[in-house]
Length: 89
Image (cartoon, rainbow, N blue to C red):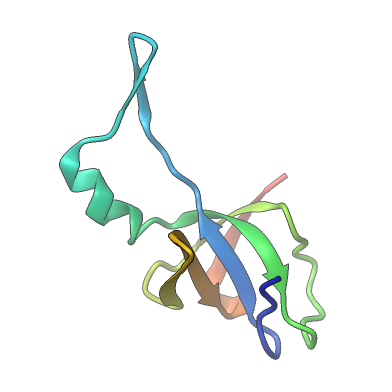
């Protein structure tokens, strides 16, 4: 289980492929763009986090504000609450 430290928020970027005639289409350039995605799903919040964001919510965040890393072939961002600017509810 992954748990961010302090008041950080752990995010898994949302894959936004385009559906073309029943098949998923992801252009080659999109692979690099996914690393810069600003839409993601909250995986966990830090033990000191006291905000309104919850695990499972989809958010938009500052793509340059957090740290990007990969664990077991899954992409993640770890951001501060100030890096989140929209919550989709």
